[in-house]
Image (tube, rainbow over the protein chains, first blue to last red):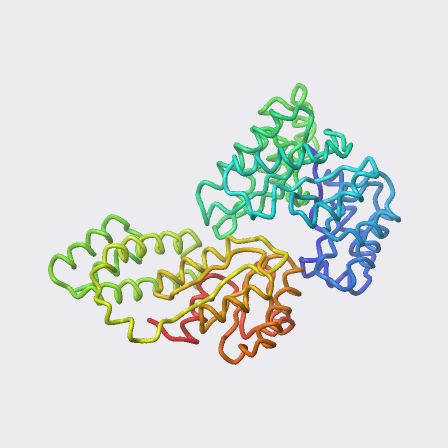
Length: 265
Length: 210
């Protein structure tokens, strides 16, 4: 399971304050904590600052990569901000995200095609948010084929089928899970990724619901996630689900995590 | 007389609520009284939601029950109400944003609360808002957007409404996962609704309704 640490996001108040104050130490500590907890990419988002996103996103990349030897997941729909951040980024970043929305797609394509970057392909189009598995698969097919046509390697594509709250429509969870399964089986070698906390919006016990949904998604083939790696129960749940679904050789990851005291239930 | 109906609605007893509504109708209760009872029940559900006792699915379910009941009752109500001024709300997701879940919930709840709602959809430019206001003549305009880039669109939309000379005619509310007081001030809207019930309450506060 590829974990993208989600914590350095400017929509979170503490992060926005740290960014504005130029507080390197706080940002670097959060980057290190996430790395130690098993994150393989550190998501960076400065989207709350419309006027200064370019400057702040660049600063975040530099600040994070001074502290950890990990690539970043550059979280922005703004090509200018991405280009500026890429100039200082070390290693192979993940671009989060491109979609079938015409404007976003046209603007971001040159950024992603020129290089061997990982790219999150969000199942969203100008027609709006997908509701059913079929909606998602239709968008995913069009988007993936489009990216392949532009010489992006299949193994660099992370399809995000888009999680929506079951509190607003009880079919949303099921349809998401179906789409993960179908996308993974139609495109052998592709990845699926998601940020799944949206699923529990409007409900009590959100963390518990999120963990349960994660296990269900892993069972369907989800192999990457944007989440809070400091959430120990979530991380334990990921390891358990991977072992149970046969993606952990001889269950060694699970056992080793147990020995290290990391399986917190 | 309508106590049982109100109780069933508030306690999310769907079958019981529908049965009660039908019984009341059969026994000759004025359909308007039944609708009044529904509004009272909805208000109680809203209060429980705001206290954290109820969750989003309760709102959705209450809305669904109300919709079923009003489908039965509406044809029975004489058109006497049309003489009084209709309470209209125009709603849409602003340009550059295509999120619609929040908008759809607010639309639904406004409708079951007796407002006439026109939903102009997602990714709608300021011109479309202006055009629709001229056509539909709402007293309230709701702008929705989840992305931070939607805030600029909201601001542009308010400006366009102002330019068209319509600003005095409408109250403007905004909603979306990330809207704050600062965002409200930035966009020039009159108020923000942190959740769907708040949106309904704003509309009630501005243009009345039970």
